[in-house]
Amino acid sequence: MKISCLQENLAKGLSTVGRAVSPRSTLPVLGNVLLAVDNGRLKLSATNLEIVITCWIGATVTEPGSTTVPARTFSELINTFPQERVDLSLNKTTETLHITCGRTQANIKGINASEFPVIPDPDHENRIRLEPAVLKRVISQVAFAAATDDSRPSLTGVLTTFEGNRITMAATDGFRLSVRSAHIAGYVEKGHSVIIPARALNEVARIITDDLEAVYISMPPGRNQIIFDLDNVLLVSQLIDGKFPDYAPIIPHSHNTRTVLNTAEFTKACRTADIFARESSNTARVSVEPGDGLSPAYATIAANSKETGDNVAQVDASVEGMPVEIAFNVKFMADALSVIDTPQVALETTSANEPGVLKPVGDNDFIHIIMPMNFNR
Image 1 (cartoon, rainbow, N blue to C red):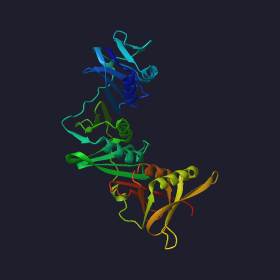
Image 2 (cartoon, helix red, strand yellow):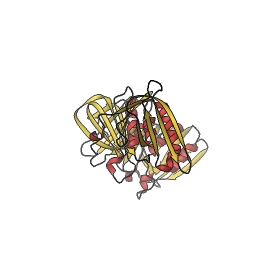
Image 3 (cartoon, rainbow, N blue to C red):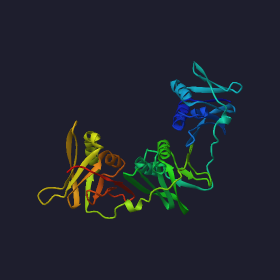
């Protein structure tokens, strides 16, 4: 293998695939990045056996070939180079990659590419087209609510349903639930659902750029995998086996109080409260007062710590219904508010012991449920 490429492109490509490298694996090759000539371009791939990320960058190919080299060593080396041409040549006998950039030379010992796991190809016949900005927004509003604890694997994933011209994603960790629907460009004749690891979806969102025209999703039959085709980047993820909880009964269909607040002000109040709520399981009280003819309606967010102190913040609101006081995990509340991109948000509540519902005002495709917490009145 003998090729040349620009340092800037190579560094960017290594950054893209690097998140899939397995840092602690019994298989040394999983700590490596695959370098291979593919149709006149340089292909970079990394995998931890759960996800595979592949990207292609422009290159001048003198001699085809492939190898794998330690990802961290190679990436750190390339990042020290100036933005000039990088020349790569492989000594196949010793499996050593010789790298030259400007007046710097280096040699890195690799592992034969034949030991690298096989990279699946996308199904170009049966795929679903999504607008990149739409997919990125849906992921951002849902994936954060997935569990990070592997004790219930299905909860570490995002239930993704394709039906007709809609995609719906839902995630829950048992204490909160985020559900988002969006329009898709094509039409799915036979509706189906899969559980995609939240980590894989977050990587997809990270890879999506403003100039990307489309994202294509395919699920080759019998492989229990989902493939995201993002122009010059391919991400393959294993799907999660298991049953996702039926979340429909959890969503309240009525409320006693509807409070509309300025999203930015409510977010700021929750983040402030979290400073004092950390020592009490992030518990903060949200009190809603409907007001009367003499005084306006408002919501109060309060938190206290026996060791640190306390704070109270008041936010103007428009309230329909009864006064209410509920304790929430204020960090969870702030997480949800941070992904709501409308100027106003509605908090719908029934009682102190029932879930609260957050909805962007003017957007009916997103709903976030947050469970109440106990507090001493």
